[in-house]
Length: 313
Image 1: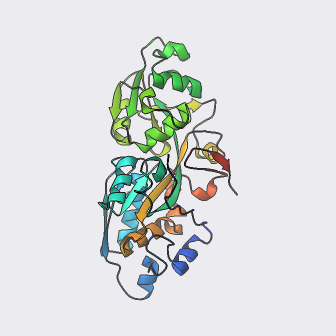
Image 2: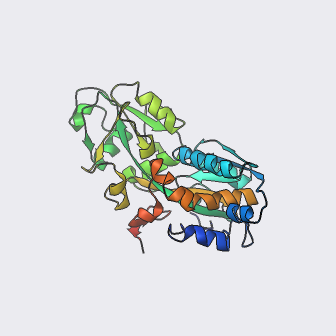
Image 3: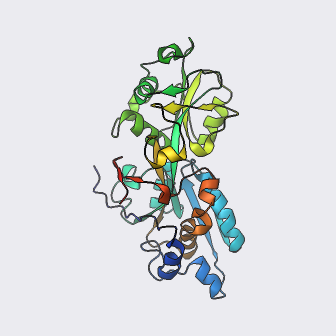
């Protein structure tokens, strides 16, 4: 459907990423002559500007934490944004209403080729996603085929998958959610129409799922690992595999996504500097894992826009 005109920027290795960024600037996003936040400070100048973002709620907390650190170091920069879903964020950055669009999926899976022709991708982290159930549900493991049955409406009672005799209450995310797209592709296969994905409720954000499933019996939904909270609901196995970062890194746990931050290729200095910061040791060295995500450098596999998983070269 698409000619994959979107620009892609592969993750800079942790060992040399910060040095490479500071020395060379950010290719594509802002041009080769970009001044980084670090170099601006070294030259005695102050970075000034406004950065705005919208998009995936799954890693909004990571972006917010990094933004707080960045603004502490650059007090004349303001960074504000929302988590209204990957589709919304991608459309917004393509239209120029925000400077950064955050997404759980590649831009070319949501936008037309002409919309993303001048976008630059920054792969800032990997996130695992998995099914979660209400505290009263006794099922601890589901196969992908069973998940397909539940989310297509073919399996409607927990007793059909080894649980108690109770109707399954399915909580879905709204269309346009990157978390939904990732979970849907893993369960149904890439390219399936969204009409195959059923639910009694469609929720806007990951935080809404946390709230609703924590107060609803016999429910099932899906969340990224960073939103897991075993005081409110239970994360369950898939195909007998625990939902852990270690299992995602090897693709043994099959539901995961790369977190993307897109900007225009002529992005302003403040936006460019913040995206460079997202790829620096200040974020990749500890903050990514502290926020419940996986550094791209830890992955032994990569996933392309069509969902194909191959060993990392």
